[in-house]
Length: 135
Image (cartoon, rainbow, N blue to C red; front, side, top):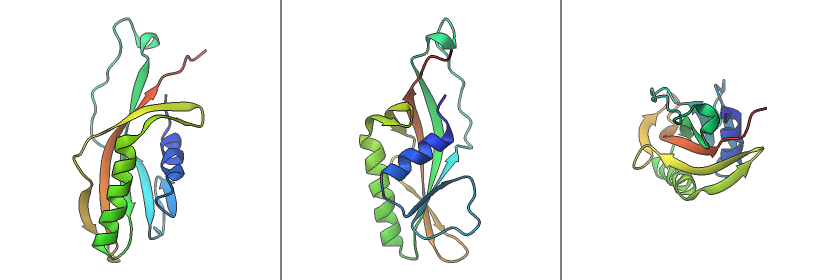
């Protein structure tokens, strides 16, 4: 099963934000990307014959692009990340292989500015990964 920390590590390799974090960050830095487990409910799926026969899994995540006080620059960074995710294929991160990323929105979603005036955008995605045998 892919861990949230592996998704965070993958996003960090893209070198889009200055800081990539998971969970909470007390004082969010400008030009940072947060990686969260998606809060949307997703239907449990398994192969006929049980989970040992599954060749892939899906990790549902929410990516928060917390950029700066320029909506234009925030949008540019969010679309750059979106494009990287859209074209990702067969990426190995740590011990896991990401087969592809299924974007769950048609473009980054503008969620406005935080209480300090820093613009934020969100990308919802499912990371489709190759399952490994568990001994």
